[in-house]
Length: 209
Image (cartoon, rainbow, N blue to C red):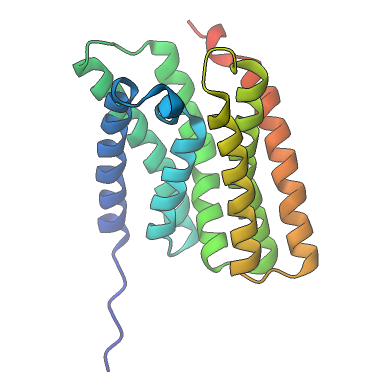
């Protein structure tokens, strides 16, 4: 039998870009559609992280392709959001585009590599990848409960924490990580979550022009 032809990186990345753009537009519209209980889903770093992770997981082949997919996913999510918000009559500020564009370039490749490592990397790398993504979800949940619970729906943030824990548990069980790798995943989750809270609470976007 013939082995299936490998997917061409350009085709894969084009599909990631198209999906990211469409999901970004959907995010902008969802801000007006979703009920209060889940409204934060359309204004959440964790949601975009999961979307970028999923797209990079699908694209994962060589690490460089996965890293590019993660960055491209976040960039096109941002572009789609800006387009959707503009159509709705809510133009995006330069500060928003600069901040989240820089975040996409810096964080996107990490998310892409995390997806590739969780999917098929050795145990230590799978632990690092799982911890990175689970940490974002848990960290955003803690941030939400601590800083914006009065103006949002608190159970949503608890849900984000639970989602991070479930993701971590699923990778540990699904990849059958040995004890040391599993412990590493837990530690990375905690470190990333703490870093997320510190950086997000600094409100860096407010210092941009």
